[in-house]
Length: 171
Image (cartoon, rainbow, N blue to C red):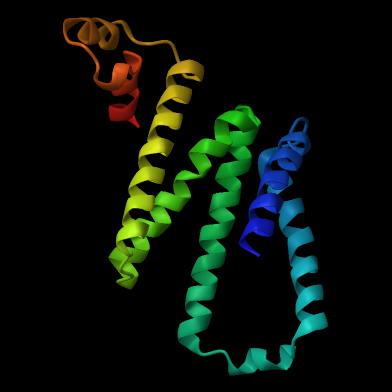
């Protein structure tokens, strides 16, 4: 299911970019959300007893509502980003959510990663930061003169572009 989710998420980005070409991103998100609403309720009616909705605790309902708010905000920001930039620029930044999720699961839920999981997390976080730093340098604003001049005084680690440190510190 996780691989199917990833494949669908990749198509979401492509379809969303095509759908926001001549549409306000907030309206596009509202249309998408309406489709999701009907689709998910159709699946719920087809595969489970929806009368169980009365048995959901207040605690669970609160966190489901908060999850919905976070999802809605994420989608609004995502569609706005797609309106402003190419999918190939937005998608890698969006994948920082994996790093944030693993860190927050550790911090808030007390989930303890295995040694392999910790290495995987570190590798993913590092590779994601390199991808995003190159995108910020390559596709971002022009390098401010001060950042470029500062980088000329000392070599940059890992042979990263001079603007990497400027953008990383201003995000």
